Image 1 (cartoon, helix red, strand yellow):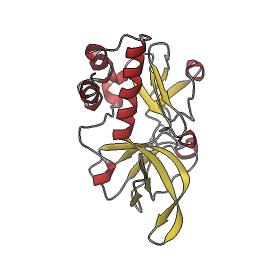
Image 2: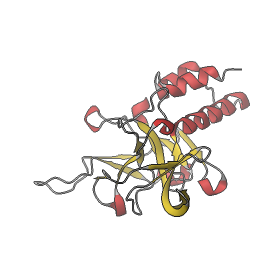
Image 3: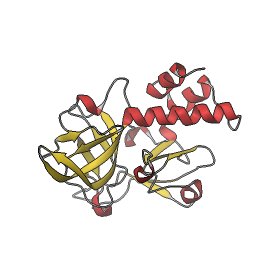
Length: 214
């Protein structure tokens, strides 16, 4: 089921109602022969799964998790966090994005990590509008966060400069588990080990869920 989950920003999909009329394009990349055409388009299915954290402006982590209409196929690929991997241990932060809605673009230079303000990470990268929700990778190309905005002011040395701001993946995992626990305790949804495993696999979300057991 983990291949059925899409993560983007809350400011992109803030409510389940917005997800019901949205779709997601996979594999939108440049091809010298065919041009840029999405390989796969899927609808979203928030009635099966929907979880969100408010925009950073409202002290959230600015992410939304929503179910796809069906699992993403093997050839599309799938990203998930790895236990113990964090932006805190990386020198650079790499962004894979769709700037201005264009085909996939890689930022390969000037990607220095700047700081770790509480639950977030700031970094120097060439980003543009439309890159919201892009995955952030460490020096070993492991998932470490989700991109939020490219006009955040941070100290670089003794000088304030414009940087990027993203939410750290370990904090996103904590927030997912906190919300699932709250739903289980309120009785609104029957979350247990098996259901968490079904949706998130055997990775950090299941581990954090079990560690947070009452």
